[in-house]
Image (cartoon, rainbow, N blue to C red; front, side, top):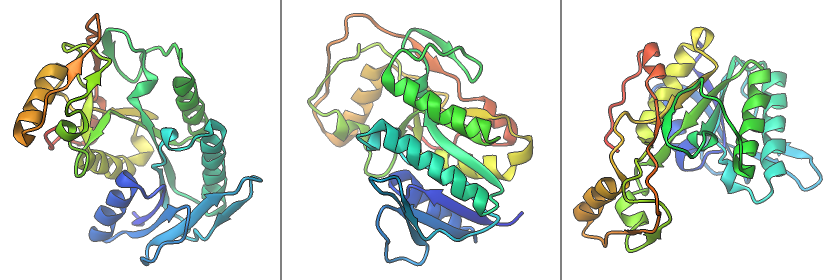
Amino acid sequence: MDKKLVIIGAGWLGEALAQTALAQGWQVEATHRKQGLQAHERQFALQDDGTLVHNVSLTDAYWVCAMSPGARRQPSNYQQSLDSALSLYKQLNGKGFVLCSSTGIYDQLSGQYDERSALSLATARQQRLAQAEQTVLAAEAKVLRLGGLVGPNREPGRFVAGKTLSSHAEDVVNMVHRDDVIAGILILIQHYPQAQPIYNLVHPSHPSKQDYYRGHCLRLGSEMPQFSGEKAVARVIDGSAIENLGFTYSCEI
């Protein structure tokens, strides 16, 4: 397999993926809106008039879109950027394309959800996620629906310290560590031809929010959050399907 990788959106997840791939001997181009200084950094920026400014040049590569749908104020800009990425991917004879989506696409009601679950798409964000997913699936690409991300500089005990959360204390968490996401992406690419179109990446442990945040706050010595939700939601996302590719969840959440 040619170890070539283009990463669209080299933020907190994308740059960590780039560094892991580089350490494993991959040839990598990872994009920002402005040109970076490191050898692997490239520019990929959609202008207000819809013009794409870029210097991505790696041919016959696998592509990962790690842009966050929530990172752009205009939803259409995210979709346009994705459309531009797919067009460039085809021009450069890409070997496979992986979209990092979100388990936020699933209904917010109690229940067990897997890749085959029906989607009601009740919110604008869910509709935006679905549009992006349908775009890449129509291009015979793959989708990874990520749980809540934790990892370096994303410590849950610091993020929630002293806050009042709109959720209920007994709601369960659907989280995943960044290093598991990176490993999952690379395993999916390794098994790209036989992989199914959509996978969830969510740690198999689903403690209550109260227990989960209590543990993190105790370790940090930070103040516990309060919960204002009136009714608990037992919403569990099943992330086991990707284990059929030889992937194992190995990082604590």
